[in-house]
Length: 305
Image (cartoon, rainbow, N blue to C red):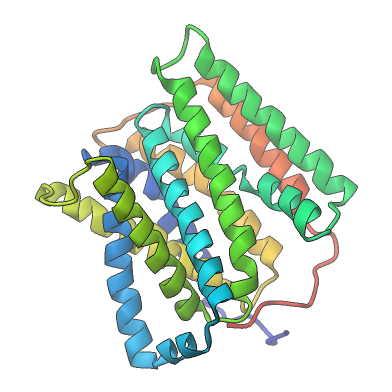
């Protein structure tokens, strides 16, 4: 649905959302907690804010109309998101922040492939070429981390975990798309994030990862991850979908590897410079994703919250 002229604050919101998601990787690297503990705190703090919004707006009434199928979809989406957080956050401690955030952004490949297989939405030739180029860029990053110049001996494992994170978040977007069309923004994220939180806590308990106590420094990091990537980043992008086509938001998200790499390079405690293989492979990935996600003729069916 068209909403006329986009509000003047839109570029500011998009810029803030890009900054929000860009700090996720560097902050996770600074934390000493286990990946599942980071994910649990990130989700838990976010859900507190969402609960307040749902209560004030009374949007929680939408939950009354949920069917068993809807709950099943939410649980599946939440489970995929939980495994995304687990694998991706774990990858950051094994490979560079730059390689991790670049590889985890390969999720459009999963979405296009899944749409073709399950939704019978055939990708265009441009999409196939672009996403193939992006995959080749992923191979370049992995080749760099598998050689003797690797900055961490487990970097290749970290690259694989980041790629699994891309697969799982791609499935999360696919399975949750139907439910998202029938629920408003805050109602949807409250349901799916809640399911994800339960799965993450269960995985943490089963793996013996303590959630409490945590050092005060880590609690501040958890709060930053909740405010930045979850609330400012993802919520900002979802708000923007009301005023601009989805492909514009997709291209904005591709700025995350650039922002995260710059932050990791200059933040005290990290000071991590990406290697030549990561820079070349990352450039190939971003170029391929831009080619595969750009829509030549913007569609008028902009989502409405």
